[in-house]
Image (cartoon, rainbow, N blue to C red):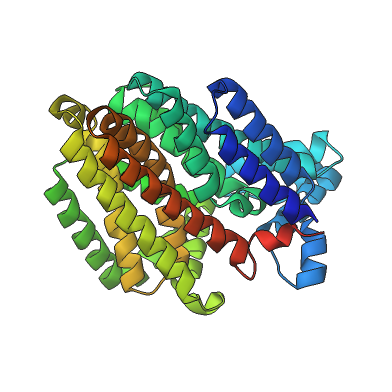
Length: 373
């Protein structure tokens, strides 16, 4: 029954994006629905009924351990901010699902806020902003936000900080990059991409090729050094790297995984083309590093497809969903003023991509159908 409520909720949020509702009310209603719905997700029931293990089972076990043992529990030592976050819900709350509720609020509030902020900074009309918000709600993996907890929070905050850093040139926000690494070591790859956006795009590409080549030849020596260092952070980073680069640790990916991500990459490329075609030169200059980050992330995602690693592909390309929403909002808002017919064509194509994503999420064997109870 729950999945019917989820479908109905998505339909209503989609319809509201056409209305004259205020953006703040839309944000509140969206987050309230998604957070309350997430609160009722039961990972143990899903595991018993479908024999499908999600990260939330392990995370709930960690929460329970913190509740019983307090800070004596030896969990998340390599990610101190995650340790603080997870332990907080174990020590101060008796209901594990409050963790899920809070996490979904953080993820969607962060992303919808930055869409609102970028839209207002670029003088986008309310309809363009509302559409971009529903585009995010539809294209971002809601199940991932519910069951993975840490990584979706990290990439959401990282994406928000990117705007304040690369576009608004706020110096102090750079500290947040380091804090996010202390919450999830996987964010280090985005931090590296952020660093190389300081150079020209062609030099950044050379750096990526050389780095991958060196990593391939000297990987064993690097890992020996990491093991001998004794630092929890580096040891955990090594474990995660080895896990996600060895596909025998996971189920074999279906073609749909690669197809949906190829669609995502093509969509990003088309939007970048439209940005350079329809937005002003002043805008392109101001947002150059911000756009280059999306280009570099797309290139690394393509490399993940070429090496047939869907686990790295999903994790690295997730942030491109946020870029798609921003770029779509800006392109639609600009084209609307210039060419009504072209605007309609772009608008319809974006809805088609959105529906493809929703069909993918609802149609997977272990997709949104897990919300059935």
